[in-house]
Length: 414
Image: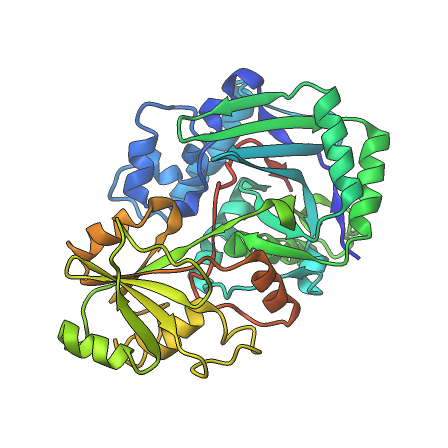
């Protein structure tokens, strides 16, 4: 069964929480990060993207960047911006966006559970991205960004969370102007923590929702530390990694859309004719952009016009968890055979746009640096769990979760 334990978080003093908390390092470029920190010396991006404090000519993956991150992290404590809790605690992290609320528990998951597939994955990771975060974790001696995990809801856990929220004041409650409310409670009752720990131990599996690279890196560092410390007991903090665990019924996945650089030599008429082999193609007559209403519906935007595509029966295997994903249907029956993009992980002719940016962003891209765009129906949490349970891997860029977990509110020292 799964392990999820309380820990002593290093976290901001209440008056600095909204200034320190920052979006995760991997949702922005280096130049965007520099812009974000211009008027905020407290931003956690000074740790997660420490190149912002160095000359633009410095390689973001150079040793001096990681050393700067370590120095900046230590400065949060020495400058009395953050403190470490005296006792191990769980933390409740509530996020509210567009009227929808999700309540997570912050704690530490086990590297052994990751290795033994109790913590289940649905994405491949890239070695160069793992190396970056391994270096960051190793040199900072800390996990600075939480892994976004989910599990099949447990009513008892939900009841404990709701009761604690009702009876206790939050330590943080803020909105950074992006429409997301962030609220945090410290669960500092040993008896409640033991009860939560027992309930988590009874959960069969956790699932990585977001943060595969951070997770893989934390696990690699943990096993490397074991090799460096052959007398380890298994209780050392490097055996665990920082995570936030949400019940599956509170989460929502947004669409993850595609933009393509060219039509692979086809005119619009030729493109539609070829697409019509496996899809019903209709010109969209409605207002604005076309948002797919159901699974196996897609929007296509080209030359200032939207089309509705519907996958024809028999062109995919509905009984196959991978093949029946909309991202697979579009890739296998259109993007690869018609547009000639065989590997979307490496082909520069395709780019991906998270649903948080809206479909106007697709029009903007198709009318500027790209040629056409596809709007997608979101992958479901059930599809994610079914694929992870089957030990399968989703195609790249299948899921986009919002809101993002902020970094800097909880630091796990290893």
